[in-house]
Image (cartoon, rainbow, N blue to C red; front, side, top):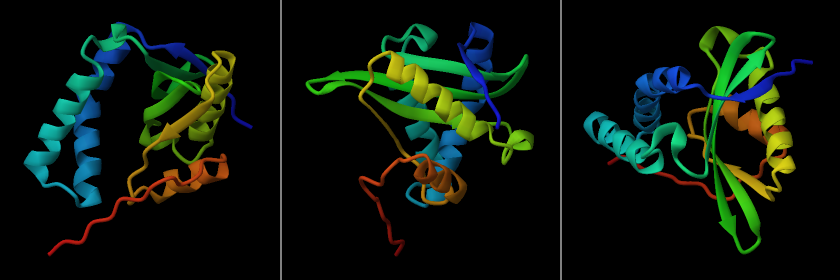
Length: 156
């Protein structure tokens, strides 16, 4: 079984992440079919600017790099929110480089994150997964995540 450790992103890692993350998010929106190219790019830029206005220093945002030994095997971005029921987390991004996918790193990153969040007193973790990302959907369901909403679109 693969195990990873999570460490806070360095500024250099964050800069590299941001250089590709917005485009990846825009591409996911395009593949989902809800937005065109220009609208997807604009929405991605807007969301990242709103959610990470101070980059790594943005309060309530956890940006981690995952390691297997000394090898970087992925990233995870989680936001924490205080609610009347306790602190909740929302996973905004989980990325494993293409050559390392289907080797258990996504699962290991999530398992490490759940343990870290539990230790911080977090009471629940939510996330979004795009409809075309069947592999991620299967992984999340295997790990005990439950569907709470489904968005649908019909092109005319």
